[in-house]
Length: 59
Image 1 (cartoon, one colour):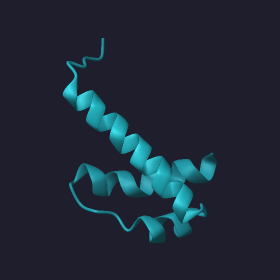
Image 2 (spheres, rainbow, N blue to C red; image 1 turned 135 degrees about the horizontal axis):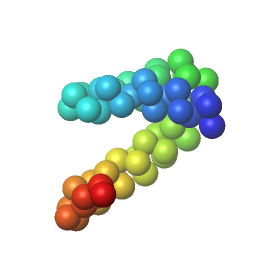
Image 3 (cartoon, rainbow, N blue to C red; image 1 turned 180 degrees about the vertical axis):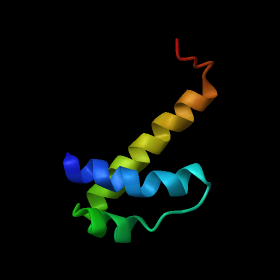
Image 4 (cartoon, one colour; image 1 turned 135 degrees about the vertical axis):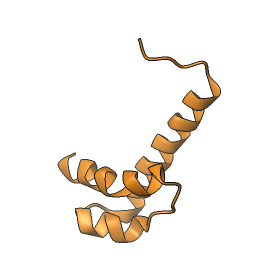
């Protein structure tokens, strides 16, 4: 889990700035399997997209 969190810390600045991260390179840097990293990132991005379509407010 610690390695995957590190991977997410590496890719989030790219995503937040609208850039496409090099997922394979960042996965290797974080020490996680690139395929698993892609799956986690795709799942997270789908959830973010879902939240954007809803009237989502943090209370």
